Length: 316
Image (cartoon, rainbow, N blue to C red; front, side, top):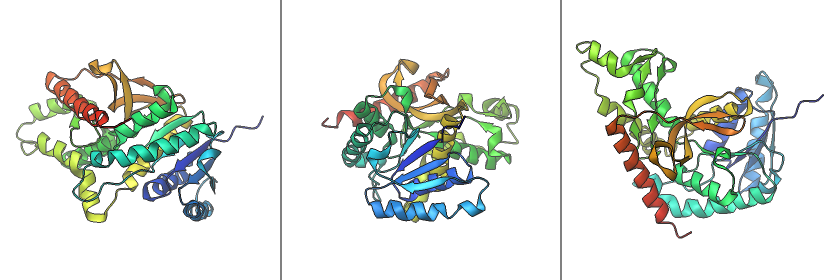
């Protein structure tokens, strides 16, 4: 019996969309990738360029250009198209433009018969993810934002430099808004399975230089550090997208900090925000409800309030 080809569409053929496609090709994540862009010729050009990687990869990924109405047999639609903030703006400042773009895209994709999983990276990602769910009518498990996945990766990288270890030996999450109100759940950060707070308590002199507030600030501001220097981020978020898609297509059940619409978890409902969740074939298999410290719970509620206030500003 022939195996069903695993197909992914990437809507937005800019820097993030192409970085995602490039990561997926080099990791052999899907069998087919369809590039979609409002400028069809750019989608064609990027599909051609990406297809020329195949002689140098371990497996072949078919890459083509398509349109939003062509996604009926696609497993995952990756949405990167959106409005980019200008210097001096925050991610929330582009909300109105992002809403218009998102509604049009989702209506066309769902109207074409798409029944798979949406994975969203367009900013402000928490609110755009909520809009995708609202417009599509899909259950929450089939609408996933990248959320604080990239922020959590940045946190692990920073900690790996401080403690001189591989970042993959660090486990922990940035949570809340993918933006200024995010926070690090320090009570759940571990290194080699040992709680970070215990390490700092046991080795006060050795790690006296470690400033957790400074690390949290650098985690939060890392994206802007990149953006102000070159005008965009692409490789980290492209790989984060590929990582989420791989967990869906392979049914990996990876635990990833993603944007999910809460349904009572952490005492919140109806807000889409960055939380750790199990990602598998059905999308979000389960939202993990960590036992946050009282201070962390307050920070989480504050972040929810920021997102809810921004949502309330929309006219729809």
